[in-house]
Length: 290
Image 1: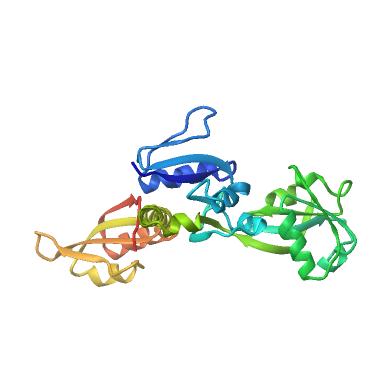
Image 2: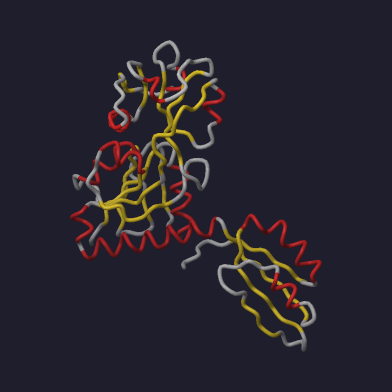
């Protein structure tokens, strides 16, 4: 049997990635300390690896494909196929940023002030390239973790990843500059991508993952409306496409079904009720495939 070797990110992205695959329709069993999750699809063999090293193993063919951040692809300068951008992270559905940060009372206010200074970060390679592109000379040291506590005693500044900035603020740090924004990417080995079976398998997985991500931000609504209130009810619905309207067996009444953005629901349902809609039902979605 043919098998696709898939790398899943271990660490901060692990839980959200497994949740996404579940929503996409895959049942994955992760037992104890095992680094080999089991898919209910026998054609997928998976392994848990840190996102930081995923691109390297995909590039050299140890894995056919995997999920990692765009930042780590840049850090390793990996020669891989970026099949899809999947906008999700540890905390939600947003991009993450690598920023230069310093203590609140630091005299460093611009990137130019880093000349001759010491910087701690996990993203050493890309940080060096970024500073070189700005013609700034600084010492960039690898940080093994707890980077926020390295300043001011062990470094003048840090380059750290953030989603909301809350951790930086909690450690009395302020952002000087953003050096790169990153999202999760589904990547593939170039040789695997040329293999007809593996490429089709990868593309099918990506279709389902993208559909699951779109569905996270949408809900379905069903309701009934009389002919008298139909026009006003329809005017309130902002849909992916036009709402589906079907006549009911009772003359002068219609069933309406629509998919809308989840964030609009709490405002639109009371308005629909006021406009004359009845029997309003909200339901979650697993996948929305454009």
